[in-house]
Image (cartoon, rainbow, N blue to C red; front, side, top):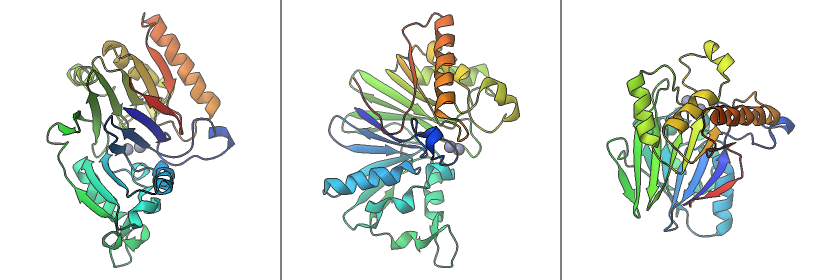
Length: 281
Ligand SMILES: [Zn+2]
Ligand SMILES: [Zn+2]
């Protein structure tokens, strides 16, 4: 599997010289399976850039779009995703059940409502909604995809991809701390032994008391999850829009020190960076 980050920022785009390194676009991750099939996780503003790349390849665009939840930073890229205006584009949407409706509401409803002048049913692409993965695992070209409910206002889903021996987990917009120990164990079980965990680490531990119930985690909680789940590598994502590149680097350093203090010296930790590509294995 190949994993490419088109957007790693949380809550709202944060462009500018201070966020140049980790990027200002909101969540969008492209996963290319071994078969060549594309799965895109979330339609944040990074989706616009992915759409431009897809167009430049010249072939008809076809992919699965897995939506984690219905908040705007995870849907805002859709109206600016150029292939959505092409007749030969096919988008198969799955994920959080309410996210599909939310995605249609960005567009006009022929009554002048919505946040964009074009109506959803005027889009030329063939867009369908499966609503499968919330009900149980799905398999795409031999890759099994499971989902786990998240601790987030209005709900959401995290995903685990397994291809052969290898797996990765993508969990954004998830508050690990308010849950019970039983709930935390569910997350540990979900990430258990994966090659790569990508998890929201929007807040610093010292900021969390002001943001309880907002549905995000700290690097401390995420490192604890990674250590208990014995994952091989961890990428922090959903960077706070106020966080500069230097501050993201500090968070990575603190996370590495914490993991080392827990004896997890083999755990690789970094921050997800817009424009970067990873290969599993
Ligand atoms: Zn978000
Ligand atoms: Zn959210």
